[in-house]
Image (cartoon, rainbow, N blue to C red; front, side, top):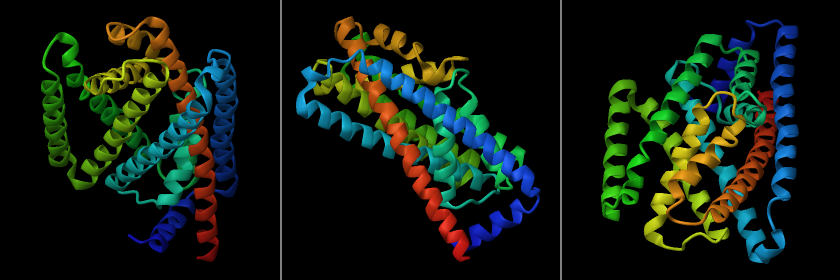
Length: 305
């Protein structure tokens, strides 16, 4: 379905809501997004006091900026995966709208409670005329895919148990292949495409932490990179499913200390986590800004039609 047809469909859905209801729902979504910005600022202030930025040098600054840009761009995969899920549920939306809605609501994950990003997206979606049912189902599907997708990275940790490095790679590739095949069989091509987007985000997140671990002084051994990435994704997963932990705060650190304790010292791991947190928070802010730009393009296209 082309962009013009998507906008016609969205206009048709939006007509079901009164102007005042739409206004209040937009305000709820915007308020949660603003709350996320405030908590992100608090997080950045805390992290800045824990990193000796002078020791990083110009190259370290450049690396953090580049990694923040990469992580911010990887969030596009989440928005596009969510768009695919909505399409799977019979609710087609434009690419720009999906990015805008996801970016604005995503920062709310930093608000204590670990649920407000979903509430914000629900409010923004309902304001756009999408039913509560499809939106709630898309959130449930997204969480299921992320939980299963995160668990698929467990084979990468096999070398920690003394197995050959290649066994972890082969097992990981095999489990991902089977999982994507099952996703296609169960939900069709669109659902499988959504799963690919979410897995792509998890892979890039793991690679970003590998780089952060290197900046903190972790081992520069290529054979350990998959292990480090797998450990990060599993720690991220535990933080995701832990009730009340904003963006997995505290939980992720504890899991990484447990999993990577045999590869490096605790101070190095903690520093890597702090650098990684700084990168992801900056990346989320960049994604938020990019989402506002995408929303602007969407509204311009809407006005022209």
